[in-house]
Image 1 (cartoon, helix red, strand yellow):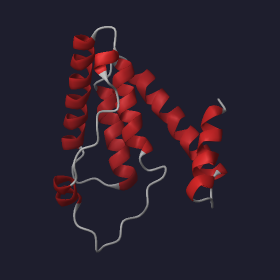
Image 2 (cartoon, rainbow, N blue to C red):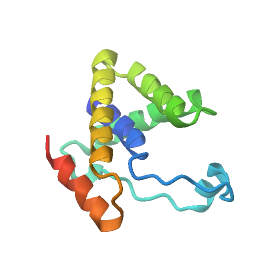
Image 3 (cartoon, helix red, strand yellow):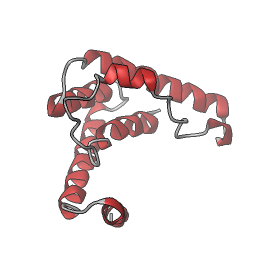
Length: 135
């Protein structure tokens, strides 16, 4: 449960790594999401040892993420990320450990972002992959 919760939190926080600043001409996010089909689920529970337990963990993590998203509605940028982190870690078994892991991951992303600054396309992707493998 904790691993899934942290994974969902990190996934939400990692989206800013390769994000581009949207133009003001773009539609609001809610309108865009309504038009786009959802991507397939990242983890296939049918391949897990206990598919039913896997589905339950995913449902619980999604519910926690939705609760955090609602609590942080209206907050953007760094404030929104901090709010999501606090809300998600507050629901974890060990909130202090969760906070520490999230801060460590944020520092790692900042390090990768700095190392790959100024690169684009395939060069950026390969740089990010290379630095993610170094632990």
